[in-house]
Image (cartoon, rainbow, N blue to C red; front, top):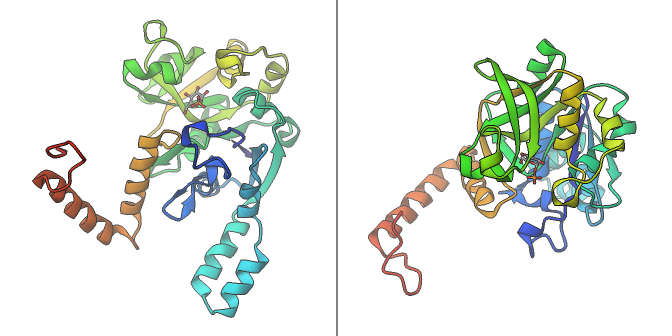
Length: 301
Ligand code: G1P
């Protein structure tokens, strides 16, 4: 199965950090977030990945390319461990690129993948979500897809007041983690949402989606929405939603990014002990009141 990673968005929520670099290159510690998405695909056994880029995204291509200068430099200094790490990035997968020429939304970005896909079901992995799962998130969907042989979308339960930030499904529960989708709606107001099952950033979609996207009108936010196209597809073919097993960080928001950054450090063998010590020290300082913001008595956790 091939995977498509849309990475053409401008990243306004992280300005000015994204003024001169792609938001997908913002790192968790020392790994750009897009590399974590690619690694998830690779861990699931995917070897061919198409990244949909746009203007100002050249750093992504450079990142997954071979870097003769850096390799030469590290070799000359005998820094073997770092050399291996850098070389491995360019060997991760067969990564292809195509540019979305106009920012016309996620549905339009996916349509740019049509010629790459070859009329087969394919995975879509959004880069604004970072997942910690025992089984890679996209692999969970691939396993379910193998069994069901139909389009399948990953969902998660969100608090009712948050539904307007997501695509929401209306589904009939078939198994503990599986629903047949009756309809989908992009970012509905809370009072109109059919459920609190929100589309998380992983999909396996049948190629009939392209015909629908080709004729699509703009939807929410004046963009061509993938959710609208999926809503049409689910009227023609059976489509499932799978409640994924794991933890999601919305790294497209500042707080989500901040939490992911800290917890990623805690997950790393080379950083965990020092990170824990530091957090204990910091928590202690905050609770004792010695870490104050101007005009505040103390910050209480
Ligand atoms: C996109 C999808 C939305 C989905 C969300 C998950 O929205 O359009 O259906 O729920 O990703 O992160 P975005 O966050 O790009 O606005």
